[in-house]
Image 1: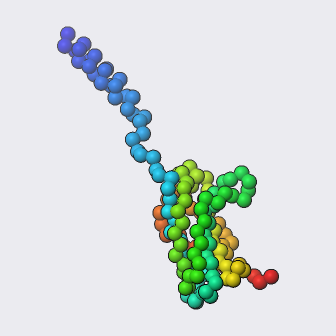
Image 2: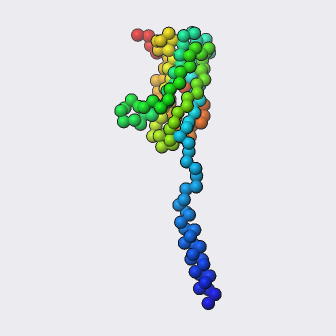
Length: 141
């Protein structure tokens, strides 16, 4: 006789606790991101006073093929390479998994002097690390 109430209680506890097995208790990640970059061309030479360093975060998964610029930051008149740039942008984890790249350019006197030529992907695993963006010299035309 005592087995029946105990079995009923056990069944009720199992039924109530089974619904909690699929509840996601982790808080959603914030879409607000800060990307710290060290833009360099492997020289420590002084830069001319009319130099501008521009860093862009681009969502390359956009349907137009060119990508959507999520953020852009420009540093005017940096003294020398490497140039530290802080870029604030918004991207959900799903966007970072699809594809976000960092592009950088250095213009002197309004003319492009250095730029990135290869993809520099940003993911959920490296978005909080300082990114070293390597630039190459643009050929004179």
